[in-house]
Image (cartoon, rainbow, N blue to C red; front, side):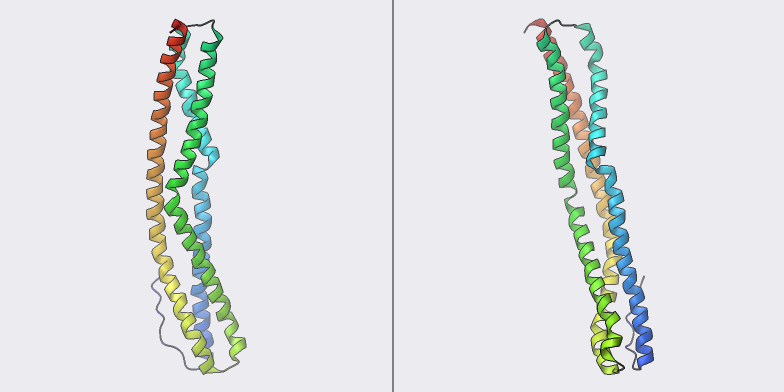
Length: 211
């Protein structure tokens, strides 16, 4: 945005014009914060529990399909062997989901802290915005009084404006890092699932053989 604070006007009319200019940029800060919160909510929808569960369920189904030929070649009349498959499958599914939720939450840590800072920026800016809006009534054509109160508030607006600009870049960086962490987590657990089903196949073979 690159907006400058500029000189402080010294007439009432110019002060009101400057106030309106500052309120415009203050509104921009507030709007950008709101956009960031909405964007993050949309962004996180791809990583909620429903999506995570569906992801794990698909891995489970793929692995069940993968080991089915081996299981079919070794039919068993023993209930403990068939029960082994269903019980182990349910356990693998539940444990994977629980562990992934914890890892997802951990991966979200930095982004969560950032979102809190963005929210605090928005709250701070809204407070400043409200104070600026009240100046005309509280100062009642008193130029010096208006200048004295308006000066620090105006400076805060443009400081927050610059902070908001920096946060845009930080937001992209953190989301990229988060996405990479999720990618690594997914691959870790997808491979773990495959290994556990390989072990399950061997356990079933031992059960059928009576070992």
